[in-house]
Image (cartoon, rainbow, N blue to C red; front, side, top):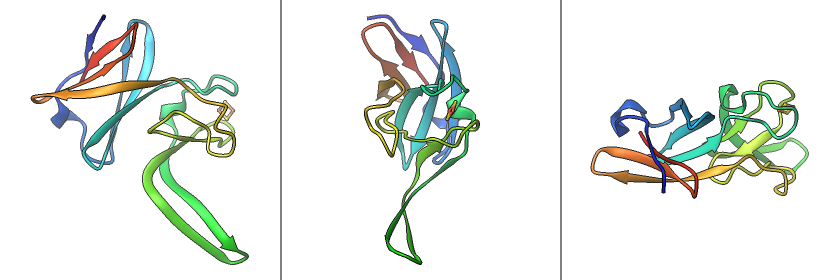
Length: 123
Ligand code: FES
């Protein structure tokens, strides 16, 4: 398994992200309530730098005039056409079949790592 050292876990505060280039791929590494997640920084729609979009909440509604904000900080909104993706899975909110690649992330001591068959990234 190949790897890429991104840096220390302490470099990414809760609610923040770090965009890295690992093996030629741009990847966003997010700290969500102390857990780390990583997704490809490429929107599957038209290729925008997805992880440069705002991080937001999932907005749901039980009816007209009722809006609830859930999962604050777990959704990224593409800066080009506003498609929203679940940072934990890489799946588009309204159509989960559409997705950007997500990477497994591990924390070893104070280092955070992203890995898959072709990539292994430490934060
Ligand atoms: S390029 Fe991301 S929504 Fe269009």
